[in-house]
Length: 454
Image (cartoon, rainbow, N blue to C red):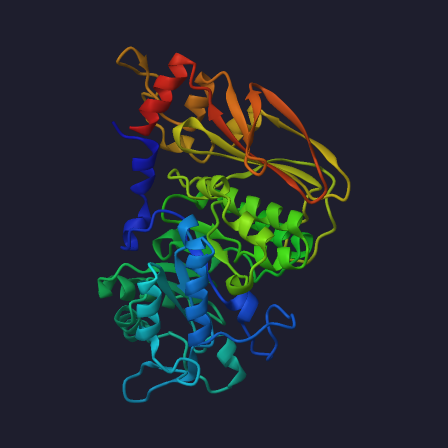
């Protein structure tokens, strides 16, 4: 019997032959250690510093010692700044910045692998990498060097490639995909700069793709507008192919005291099946940030095997003023929902306002959240098998399920049964992050859930 998961896995991911079905989880140094082409740090605080070999080894150590690795964060990645900005004239290869990485790139990868983690690297679909544009004649972008770069990364032991834009040339995206496939090494591919006018094809070239510009550590000024911009592409998400509204600012937010904002940010990223790439200094992390990043129930929503992105199923008419011409206004209140494995649902009730708000979740909203999955249902969805109803789509399961147990993911407690609606009071900038699980005592529902899992 075919299930939704099987059907979704039969998607165009075969064009990218690497076998990564779920959103990536890991670390990237740019938000906390990166220095742009203007010479300024991305996260401009007194303790900011560049990343180098010793820093990245310390990051790998911290990923293990803090419990982040055990929570599922496995990639330790470099960003722009590991090259000199140039290529070797004889080999055509990118020249490693030996002053920052004196032991070479393979040695760093071996150290990261020795910690039980995976190794990520950075390049761009252009002539120059982003931070290398400080040198007008730099040549370290991968445009027309995809094959030599992919081969080098495979020899380093790379498991993850961040393939940035920086005045990208579109032919470089399929070229890099093909070059990575040719190495025979499974390397997860995350891209930025892909032409979103052809976004319906992006899953052929990447496991995840940026849908917005770079974020910063402001919930309402940057993060919330970006997750709403990301919402436009919810229909594209499926196993192995995910929308990326940019890296996590959770630790940076929490360090500055915005714990509520950080929790809301993480909830929305988890529900939207965004890659969970930590952008804070994990060697100097607050307890509050660590508690948010390692919430196993929130992570389970993000890593759910269905791979279906939660999206906005209700928004208030009132909204915040837009923060820029390219980003949508953020509604004062919104409800996000999406199906999970086994007939369950995730829901986020988000209050972007400055006063407590009453927000309602309804069964109709849950039904709306299934519309990107229903197209995968079989035509004989009402067929009877073994004396019980055959489970097909999340919408079909919802129609058979009378009640759900509501679990508050942050409070880690049950809120009781959900039937047709639930009204909650949500504090300013906060969320109510829910998992709604079918009540197992209903015989027909139990058979439906068991059938869906087969």
